[in-house]
Amino acid sequence: MMPIPERRRAGVIWYLTGGFLSIFANRSLYARLVDRDVRIRYKGSVLGIFWALLNPLSLLVVFSFVFGIVLNAKWGVGGRNFTLVLFSGLILFTFLAECINRSPLLILQNSNYVKKVVFPLELLPGVVLGSAAINLLVSLLILAAGELWFGGGVPITWIAVPLVLLPFLVLTYGVILFLSSLGVFIRDLAQVTGILTMLLMYLSPILFPIDLVPLQFRPWLSINPLTFPVTQLRLITLSGNWPDWIGLLWYSFAAISICTTGFWWFWRTKNGFADVV
Image (cartoon, rainbow, N blue to C red; front, side, top):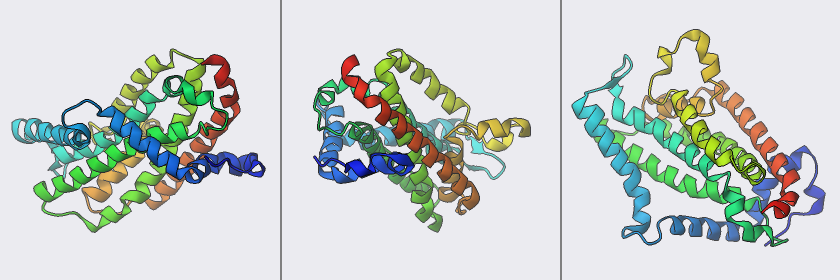
């Protein structure tokens, strides 16, 4: 394990980059922890790691049958395939919900690391992020396969997917840092996050087009961290359009601010973990 130099442990730049610097400095350890986390999740199951592929695939098959065959549902005026539109939104929600719901008990479930003075605790939120990101990547590959099957091709705009997802991942890391620290001191937080994730889903344009929302309520909907990435992912993967670059800039700024705040909170409170766990 490689400690970060003390001179970097102060100021806005440190709070902005500290978590990522720690992951990079301990990248071998980080990779092993992510691998271990993924393996533990499927340990004992017959199919093992293949569940990471089968879970989103079965979701897509069910949606195809219910919405595509039984209900013959279409999305908006353009009549886009409802199955793919819904699936593209749900994979981002599933990723965020997994990260949020695991966060409050993260430090408590890894209390053995808290006792190790030299262990960089900020790796733990990064492990949750990395583990969930693997499932997200698998789901994106299934989305691309679904486009080939239903739509006949994958648009060139798919190359912009990382540009949309990167700030979303940065924002999520900040949320994990904040909630994992807060969960050490407020044990009821684990119950609250379940309600929070449901609200995030129903108050974002995952199940409905944003055009159906009255104009006066759309600014409130845009506060939801899922709204922008969901709409932009659909735009570039299903419609073949480039993202809203100005909106992406603002979302990136918000994501960096949230991540910086999350790391600042985690760094300021982590010395008190040992007294509580």
